[in-house]
Image 1 (tube, one colour):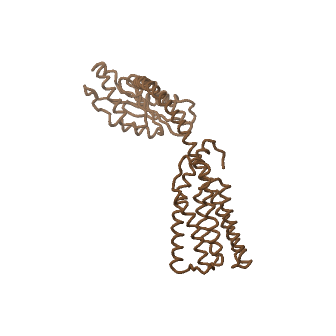
Image 2: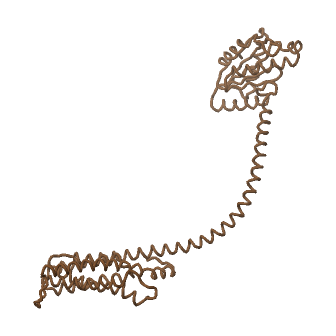
Image 3: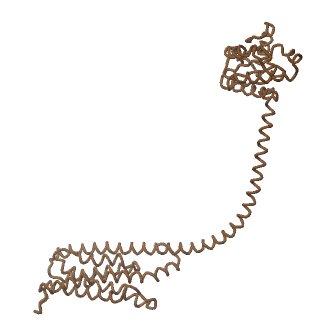
Length: 412
């Protein structure tokens, strides 16, 4: 049995006799009914004769009468103990009463030995092992006492030869060993379970006290938490406003304020990024440089505001007719660039040609000014050492388009 606290052991020993008393009363009541019924049946069928000779039925009747008397003691003792009746009464009613059953049990086993019947032995010794909880050594002692009584009767009884007596006695010994093991296991389990529960109660009481202190501290912590939550809410609100402002600043830093497309800064960051990605994965990269044809007279004739409207609408139309992955940026004045990842010069030129055909002569701005553009297209070459090389070639193609009559797309 595992080591346990003295208080838990003492509590177990104090409560166990009361539980034993209840089981003893129930078992005695059942045994009294069985013994009385069997004795009554012997009297009614005429098995009892006053001839001075004990017949087997009369021996059975005497054994049942003895067991009935022992059972009557348990019934009269009642199912409960009084707190004042401690040591002697408990010992008498616990181990003493159980020991009184064993001679009667041995008598029944001896009478049933010629039939090899151990029913009476099992019906009394097994409940004693299961329900009577006491010290494991005393539980084993009760079973050994039952074995001693049964063995004495079997050996002294003349109805069996030596071989049959030895065989039957070995079966009784095996049953006794089993019942003794059951008694020890059940008692050990009960004691350990009680001790564990008792120690848990003590720990629960200590935990309850600790919880009370924790609740007091928690209330103080709740007040501080509420104040901290208010401060955090203010901080989150300020952080959200700051994040929104930062995002707006980033957008403004990379966006042309007039046209809403990317500015030169965002363009150079993007072309450097795409140049590295193209070199790393072997992708294609094309670039178009676009310049509005004859845009200077527009400002002189219609004014700067009308010119700004034309630039803004042209940028929006260019953005709408290029791919989602393409970057449209205002390079300066009336000049724009389109960065086209995953695209070669031929495909880029075809795309720009379609855009040119759609926008050529289309009225833009509130003054409905018709405008055309020229474009130069180039793709990143294998021997390019930096991203600006493709920009220079596209710009050269643009100058050729201008020299060739404007309103056209030239490839590098």
